[in-house]
Image 1 (cartoon, rainbow, N blue to C red):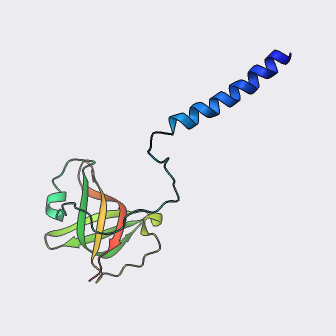
Image 2: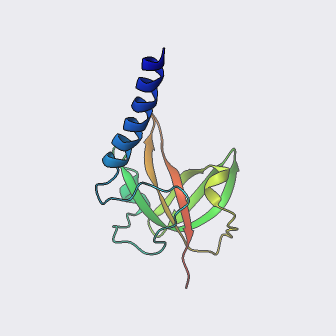
Image 3: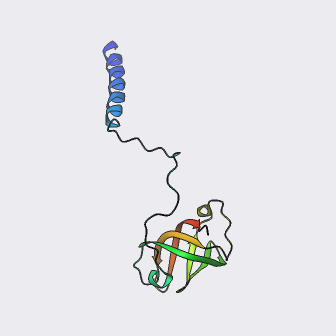
Length: 129
């Protein structure tokens, strides 16, 4: 019985050492509470006209104005080339209040259906002018 207890304790000790060694690569472990860069990034902003012909699930960035709420987390987005329906989940607003006159940058992906194309927004950022 003592052998089993000793082997169990040794196994627990060595597994902790193995985990520590695996994380000793010089790369810090991800910390979900850490912040990161917030601001302009080098990404091409596409137009509504371009977005309407992109394949399903294409990641994109749009810049323009949200001009109308359609209900059920859907909105009309407009830029200089036209309008498109965007879906913005309530938690993606991150406490921001956006008015039709506010220019915003939307980060998301194309959601192509059989008869219509929409944009599923992951993040919204008010453009500071």
